Amino acid sequence: MKNKENNNIYFWQESIWAQLAGAWEQQRMPHGLLLAGPAGLGKNRFARVLAGFVMCREDRSARRPCGQCKGCVLMAAGSHPDFRLVSVPEDRKTIGIEQARDIVNWMRLTSFLAGYKVVVIDDADLVTREAANSLLKTLEEPAGASLLMLVSKRPHGLLATIRSRCQLLRFTRPGHEAALQWLKTQDSSADWPRLLFLAGGAPLRALAMHRDGFADLDRQFSADLSAIIGGSKDPVAVSAVWEKQPSSVWLEWLQTVVLGMIRARAAGTAKIEECEPVHLIQGAVNINLARLYHYLDDLVAARQRSERGGLRADLMTAAMLIPWACGLNYRSIYQEE
Image (tube, rainbow, N blue to C red; front, side, top):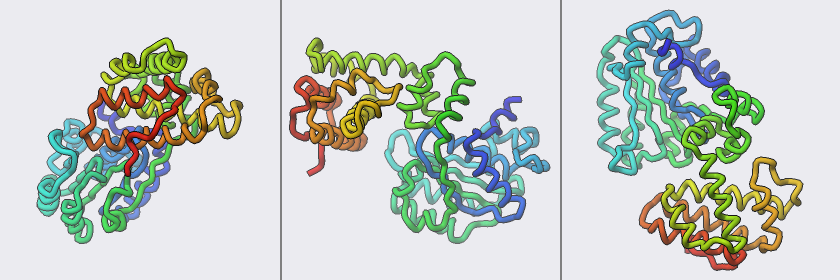
């Protein structure tokens, strides 16, 4: 039963799956695929199910891996000799030339089970230029029955030559109501409208936030920011608590608040979503709109610089919270010169 469950795809992926299953049946399966779209849409799981499908040893008239044959059992166990999953090593920030060469050489070898050889590269936009040029050889001159799948939430970060040699599969967020209905089947007690909003409409990301207890953190952030604005809490003291979280978490949360404030200022409070912190957004009426835009730019710049490293978390957190104590009356800090 577990194998069967692992071979399921999500309802918002069905049209893409049907497209590829049709290509398989017509013997037109591409050698290179680019799975692109926002995080939280299950692209990696889709890639693994597709890998299992092309390596399944049984009849695939049902358009799914059977889950029972030798190939499916090996895939479920993570030990299929003709499948490789490549990602950024823990001690690095990119996928380098050594990994790429290893992939190229491995794909040239004969299949162990006389079928497909499949490679999935996660975060493919983090492949270095040298590594990408090495992978081009595999895409230009595929070795027999092989499939290279590149998974990326930032496909523009890939070389144009790589993108042009892959069939693009664009994963999009499902409709709001359909996503909510699916999430309710996972847990009927969660505040899914708020979590789905914070997750940018990506159901799996909303589900992960729920399982990580983000609802409590969301309430804490909202209460702390309200207290800073009202003068009952010291922003430096609050920053000492917030900095215990990854900077990307609270920076993105602040972005959702500021965007709500900008929308309310531009289109009126009627545009405030029910799942947004209304009390915070309504409190923006006295903040200059230009300051909100400058602050939003700083949040984006701070997040980009934080991802590159080299910033002290404690100083960055305080720098982004102190302005709330004075109506965002400040000069940009993190924007690039």
